[in-house]
Image (cartoon, rainbow, N blue to C red; front, side, top):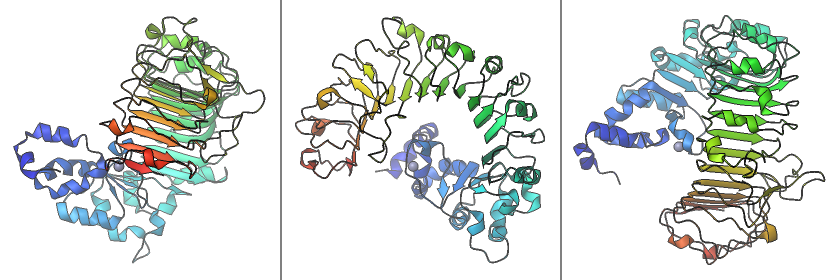
Amino acid sequence: MLDRDKFKQLPPEIISNILSYIPNCKLDPLLVIDILVPYILPIFSQKVRLAAFIRTCDHECYSIPPCFASFESLATFIKRFNTYPREIEIEIDVQSLPRTSSHWYDNYIDILNHAEKLHFRRYYNNYTEIDIPGEFSDKVGDLSLSINTKDQLPGVLENIPRNISALNITIVKFREYRLLEFKNLKALRIPECNAEAMKYFPDTLETFHALDVYSDGKEFPLDKLTNIKHIDMFVQGSMSNVSTFLNSRKQLVSLRIGNNLIESIEELNLPLQLRELSIFFSPVLINYFDLKKLKRLRKLSIHESQFPYGLFNIKENPHINAFFPKLTYFTYTRLIGVSNFLCFRFPRLSPEPGYYTIVMDDRVVFPDSLRSLDVAGNFTFENNWKCPEYLRTLILKCVKFPEDGFNVTLPDNLNTLHLESTNLVNLDDLEFPVSLRSLLLICNNDLNSISNTNLNDLPQLETISIVGNPERFDKDNLPNKPAIQHKY
Ligand SMILES: [Zn+2]
């Protein structure tokens, strides 16, 4: 429990430091402690979110601003602490707000007047649907639009305030965006566009996301998007027109990219400063060796593409640690071809003919820097495979163990183990690492027992989640300390 008197004795920087460990969703109850109020209010005065639905608490609660369920509860807060938020993320549907006049905002005009930025997080069909006073148009920051036909789009774009910082458009099939007038636009998310359309994007853009970009034999404009930091796109057509563009993006730190034609990472000509790379839906990509250039790479994700055997094969690549000095996260998913969705999240039946098995044996070695390994697909773990030594998180989904037994030697520092849609029958006699905090067992349909383990003796264990298993699962042998949350 928090002791008010003890807080009074702490130096301010220590209090600030303690509060920085508390997620934003948990700050509100602390406002009853007077001494903490001056530390917490600045967080509320920066940015708050209005959301009708309470989300499940997770790590994002550190980045998502404090939430209020309604304008009324925000108004109560403002009255109580005389603190107005500078930015408001409005996730509630303004059209459905209770109103005493014809405009939704009339009851909240004081709050809106005090705000500098209003972000509309719900999808609207048109900016005019939001119906806010004209003099507020410069306050509109992020905007999301859901547009059904491409004929509507030019008219809808015409109405949008020119000052917005983020534009998020969904559904419409339209390829020729002209957005140069949006001189403060930092983030753009669209369903698709031509390479040529990029000529008409403002240079302020830092984040660009498109489901499909059609290269159409056209060069990507080299003098545009020079400030881009994050790109997420599937390139339809030849990649040869993209690589020079990618290589010369000096600010680019994260890239998510897919293409039907590339066979080698070399063809992408990736800029050396990349910290996060995600490859997806690139079925003929087999040569990943050029990734060795990316010495700053921290996160590597590969989805629905071939497993990068060569990279992590100790015979082909004996200097794996020098190769990836900073790689912390590796994720691999390949579920197409195994999908029959027996379980609510991942399938567990045999794969279709032609689908290959990814064998994890002593040849597959990950770098020592790896802290999180997350794989989903038709993997088989051989007895001689060595789990990376310094791993903190191990997530295995939709994998098969030979003779149905868990045969992975878990590293000492592991704190999260997540096994999902496996063929495991039991975890009896398993010695879990002493640092384990969270054990997640999800949709392991044959799993019926975890007995004779050390689960009762793990000092840091916080969560055991067992979800989607058959009723016959014997819960009696599980630890029953009050600190442990069980979910069935
Ligand atoms: Zn939370």
